[in-house]
Length: 160
Image (cartoon, rainbow, N blue to C red):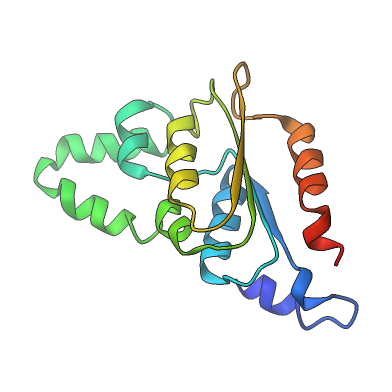
């Protein structure tokens, strides 16, 4: 959020055409930024991380979800409190607040950012959105092709 605010103060930047983009943790951060700064021009989130914690904990053994599951296995009485706390950081909550045109992608073989967690953020997203699903890719999703597609799709938005 602060980075967007700072970039908008630069003389050579059109403050109305600032977009946020990222892969994995960067995708989660971009999603959070789009939720906190609703007037960003566009969002690109490739394999967004830390979305739908409860679902991620249930279906993958990758970190940090495995660490959360291990903690909950030892602290069974704290399950609801843990997920209430994690909700403050969950990409789904930020997605529901965001309204900029968005482009998501995910690989169906991604164990680190399970595709169903990306779908959770996608379905909660408050603005116009598209998603590209890569059947045979993992955490890389569509790689550089994703970014090229997103930049092409947002050309009209960013080139006013």
